[in-house]
Length: 453
Ligand SMILES: Cc1ncc(COP(=O)(O)O)c(C=O)c1O
Image (cartoon, rainbow, N blue to C red; front, side):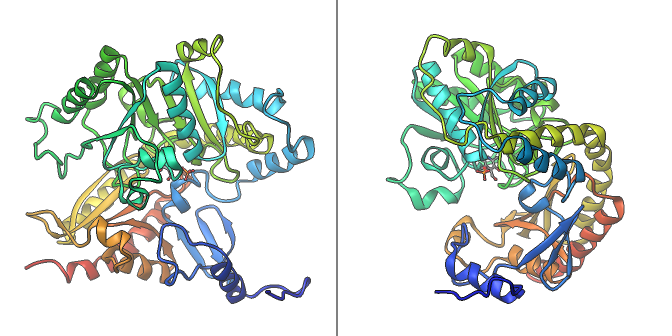
C-alpha cells in the first residue's frame, strides 16, 4: 500500500520511486531502472521535476515530430474531448471522415482504405492479417535489422534481439528473414555499387524457394536498428520483384513517416508505391496514441465480398483522430517536411565533422532530420564496442555511458547497441542542433579512449 495525501504534490523522488516499484520498465533489466520524472515539455525541450531542462535530441522515441505542446494540437485534443470522446468502430464520426480525407491528400498515391489502431505494433498486426487474408498465403519476409512491434505477430517479424526472448513459443510462425541493406557493413559482404543490389536479388531467391509468401515488410529507412538508407536502385528492384511474384510490399513507416526524412514518407524518396503502408508516432506527434494501416484499392475491393476479420474496441477512436488532423495541418502550415529537408545538409555536415575528429566514429548516415552515428572499436574491421547479445544480457554499453553523460549535461539522445539516433523535432533550430552535437562531440571522448590502437 502506498500512502499519498490527495492534495500534497509528489516530489520527483516519489514519482520516480512509485513508478519504479509498481511499473515495468520496458526492454530492460528492472534493477537498474531509475526513471527520470518528466514534469513538463515545450518545443524541443523537456523539463524534469526539479526544473532542469533537456534538449530532446531524439524526439523521445523518434515520435514528437512537431515538438512538445503545439498549441493547435492541444486545442484539437480539448475540442475533440468536448465534442465526442468515444464511438464504437461501427459508427462514422466527423473526425474519422476529416482525417481520412486528409490522409488521401498526403499519403503516397494509391493508398485509399484505412484501418486505425492505437500503436505501430497494432497497425503492423493489422497489415500482416490483411496481407494473409487477401493473398490466401501465409509467409511474411522480414529483414534481420528491423523492428516491427512487440506483440506475437509483430515481434515474430522483428529481426532485432527483442525477438529472442519469444523464441520459439511466444511468436507466430511463418516469418522468414532476409539480409538487410547495409552498405556500411554489408551482411552478405558485398560492396556497393559492384554488388548490383544482391540483397534485393536474394529476396527473390527466398520468395522462389519459400513459396507461400504473402508479403515482405520493410522499414524504407531502417530506424532503431541503425538508420540504414538503401541505395537508389534497391526499392525499384524490390517493387519489381514483389509485383512479378505477386507478393505484397508492406512499408513500415512508423518511424520514418510525417516528414522525418525530408519527405512526407520515406517511400517518396524512391517513388515507391507500397501495397500497404503502416505508420504511427508522428501522425499525432505522439500526443495521443494512433496507428494507421493504409491499403490500396484492390485490397479494399477484396473485402467487399470477404469477411474483414479484424478490429479493436479502440479502432478509429475519436480522441486520436481529431488531433491527427490538427497535427497534419500543423506539419503543412509550418512547412516541416521542407524544413527537415533544408536543415538536413547542415546536420549531415556537422555529424561528418564528428567523424573526421573522432576515431571511434565509424559511420554517419541518414536522411532529412534522421541520422545515425555509429561507433566502432576499429574503423578498419568495423568491430563494434558491444554486440546485440550484450544489450539483451544487460551488459554496460559504451553508447549508454555516453548517452548518460549527455543527459546529465541536458541533452537526451537515444542509443541502440552501437549507434546514436539523432532525430530532433522538425521545428529544431540550427542553434539547438549545434548544442546537441556539441554534447555528443564532448562525450565521444569516452569511446575514443577505447579505440584499438
Ligand atoms: C519501424 C517501427 N515499426 C513499429 C514500431 C512499433 O510501434 P509502437 O511502439 O507504436 O507499437 C516501431 C516503434 O518504434 C517502429 O520503429
